[in-house]
Image 1 (cartoon, protein in one colour):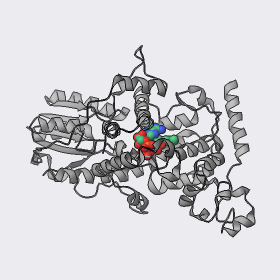
Image 2 (image 1 turned 180 degrees about the vertical axis):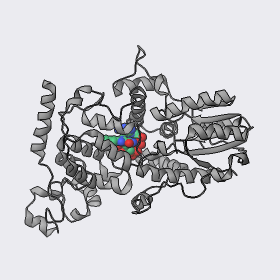
Image 3 (image 1 turned 30 degrees about the vertical axis):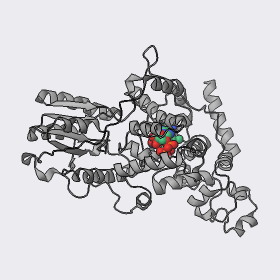
Amino acid sequence: YPIIVWFREDFRLSDNAALSAAVEKGHPVLCVFVLDAAAFPGGAARWWLDGALRALDAALRTHGGALHVLRGSAARLIPELAQCSGAAAVHWNRRYDPGGRAVDASLKGTLRQMGVAGHSFAGALLHEPWTVRTRTGTPFQMFTPFWRAACAVGGPRPPLPAPSGFSFAEWPESFGENRVVAAGFGLLPVAPDWAAGLREEWTPGETAAQDGLTRFVTEDLAAYGRARDIPAAEGTSRLSPYLRFGHITPAQVRQAVLESGQEGTKFLAEIGWREFAWSLLFEHEDLTRRNLRSAFDALPWRTDPAGLRAWQAGRTGYPLVDAGMRQLWRTGWMHNRVRMVVASFLVKHLLIDWRQGEAWFADTLVDHDPASNPMNWQWNAGTGVDAAPFFRIMNPLLQSEKFDPEGDYIRRWVPELADVPAGMIHAPWAADAGALGACGVVLGRDYPAPIVDHRQARARALAAWTALRKE
Ligand code: FAD
């Protein structure tokens, strides 16, 4: 009897408990993925998913197997496949988003009725979300005590090696060979092809993830604490899409850091933020939709389609904001410091509802994560639990001068400012028009004038907040 291994967000062979347990039992395995349009990610993450499917299939082929990709509803297809193949069990690694959990719970019931075991395994997080709790058993509301408690729980089990001695089951004829999606998965952009920058920047897959981890630990971990806030330095791991798609597990990342013998507290705390985000989503299924601080429900967000479009296109006239938004559009990723600046700009300078920014990130980030994205947006907007207060309004100019002092990051992503020296690049609107013109820039022609004035925007945001407090 075969065991079906149902891959979802765990595109790897190593540290894959569902796969290892199936192989260890000595049964032939049937590796499947279900393309379920109801659960499709945003555009950039769909591009990544295509690469993830191909990379996993190639990895399984080196062991003599393959990944069978089906299209439709998993709740219907997995039991059907279990029936046709005479499977003894279905294995999967747990996911923690509300939609996924609902499908998995109902599927377990369906399989039980059929007499097929449904086994789920851990791996996407260091700790299961329900295991890190306060003394009274309630979920944590603040990151610091959460992470302290998580560290006190101890590490997860050591990461598993990739299994060896695979045996693969034949595809069940009665299920129909034609139901397997063989060629294109329909995930890539057709026209226009906006994915060129993604292709240049990224290689989805487990091998690239492991290489990236090794490179980061040997070259960048030591300086992480200093370099992580400088967008031009590229001093962070860039592991986020690999963690998002489960090409690598947080347990593997943690082990590599600990084994390197280097100081990794700051870096591992970032992995801790990811854990915290998932524990929040586990408790608040509507994290993407609802202000965790309901007082903010009364905040008079502005309807400003032109402002939203300028922000999305990287044409706000604030060079650091524009550089970040263009990096996002081109590569599907943005440096964390700049994510904070652009989020604050949208929510406070433009007074646009954070959910519109969250939705844009969801569509454009290759690392879009259903927990980290809304948690960080709510953190920056001040509407979340452990959040920056609303009245703390980031000044995009000061952020630019502090974190991109030479303007290197801006020049890379805003090429029309490539010849502008550091003294003028952070605030071209304040520069002498003649001097700016000598660098090939006429404001309003080559690069936009600011769409809002910082001082006025700040005053408007604070007034909205003060009115909210009075209410
Ligand atoms: P590193 O600094 O190398 O950190 C290592 C890992 O820790 C990351 O890969 C990530 O998994 C985790 N991590 C780091 N910072 C955070 C954080 N603040 N919150 C949660 N996890 C973190 N991260 C996502 O993975 N997906 C998202 O959709 C996402 N949306 C964001 C939206 C906003 C508005 C902001 C401000 C941040 C968002 N982040 C998101 C968090 C963070 O910006 C990225 O995880 C980080 O930039 C990824 O780069 P890295 O892998 O080089 O990070």
